[in-house]
Image (cartoon, rainbow, N blue to C red; front, side, top):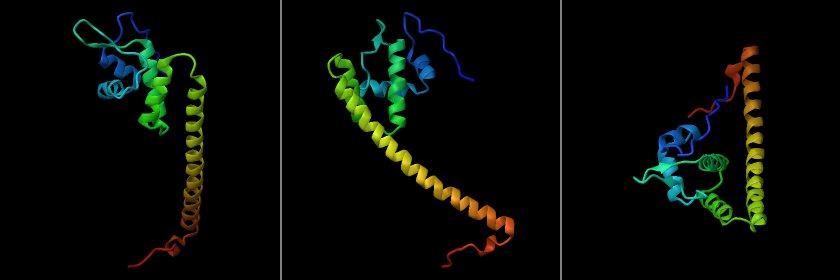
Length: 142
């Protein structure tokens, strides 16, 4: 079941709560900030503690998903820079995302081909086990 989070309060969320809501560690949140992956500076309390807004949480989720698809940190950083710069660079943002989509699509195609081989090997083993001649499968000897 999908967990529905309450709205982010006006005062923002602590790093621990932001980590819980985004599914990444507090360490990762700090790293994203140090690595230049955030689009706007994370708010701070008078005592210097981070306070995360909904925009921050949404952006962390975008970064996390881009990383999960294999986008390099430097590319995410470039994308964040473009977004932070505001209007006028939408074509560059689009080109960046289209190039990444092409990479992901190629990787998925390769994974699907590898999965076909795995499925074939499973079918062979099931068939040989069902017919009782699995011991005839090739096994190298030293």
